[in-house]
Image (cartoon, rainbow, N blue to C red; front, side, top):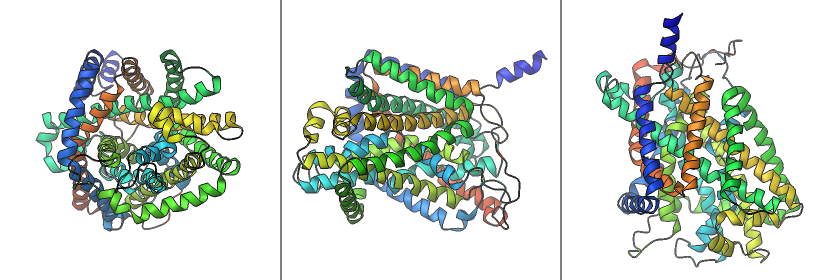
Length: 527
């Protein structure tokens, strides 16, 4: 009995990628803690140089990945099933879309939907006057643009390779290095090259998870502080964070079906009810009209937002040039995580169903959030009910959120609902992150099992400790910029996985052998 136990303990995690990743994160965190201002200045300089040099590259990368997503969906590859073509998908379409929405959006959409327009209105593009009505309209349309095809194409286009690897070729390890084996061969994949690829993934995702926890917390703390009439302090933030962590740790422990799936579907109903409530008790007619205008402006200016570099302004730029590049770079760091998780939950789905669901479902909900929340805050600004632009400039985005929500009737209920929805979004995002990282770390056969529950909790603790350590010393900003910088190698890896997916399916003639030819069998297998 002792030998099997020792073997099981030895195979708990893949130490050759886990240990280097944790060491790198620990060193970076220590340096940020000791040299916060110097780290921020150095990283800012590096990032600004990269933005100035490769601004065009980031924009074209995001645009071309959308084209790749559409080509995969509507070509022969789109009909390839991830799994047994005769079996039903693991989740219903509503459950599946809800899970992808919860992973793809998170609590960030609550913040950008309500306040992103203000940053653009204060520093508008296209030669518009700051604070003008058209600048405000451009700002809300830009908020919608952030959650359109480019973002979700970046998130999903690792999934075809990872899903095919897991559910068709049934490989035991769900890792980027394994997906790229078909390109680089066995020597590279099993050697130092494969380790480098996997360590890059883990470092970027652990850093990104910590940043998400750190940046998502103020959305809740400021609203709770408004409700309780107290100041936002670090001990208060610590308590809120630990409660949050308890929530996503429990969800991660019980698994996808009992955790993420239930929370995701419940939150869809709750978000819908919240939107209806805002329209009924708020300026509903204005919100609907402004949403229509915002959508019109977005469609009319989609290419302007997509490829705008403002190259003729040699003395500087506006908010959206640098922010769009940062947004795409930051999204790229999450591409691996989203792609791996999308692959995990897409058993039984075709590649077309997977890609189009991820492109459309989160985008439509984000437009709803931006239309309702952005319309509400814009109404408060243009009717002089609340100086939203002044609050954002003088007190910050976080302070503007409870201020806008408190301007509504039954503001306490509104604040509570907003906070609950944001909390569930963050829980499901971090739960998905925890589950995916545990899957990646594990030495189990992922085609036959799920990651150990104890490993999921260990990952949750690791992300939490990193986030709290950096929050306590004000180091989240450098880590956020670092996450953006790591988008550069991740972009290259993502492009490789797209070619890897095509090559694997070509080798197997999957569009002939692994497609639906009849109705589902009665077997509905779950992992």
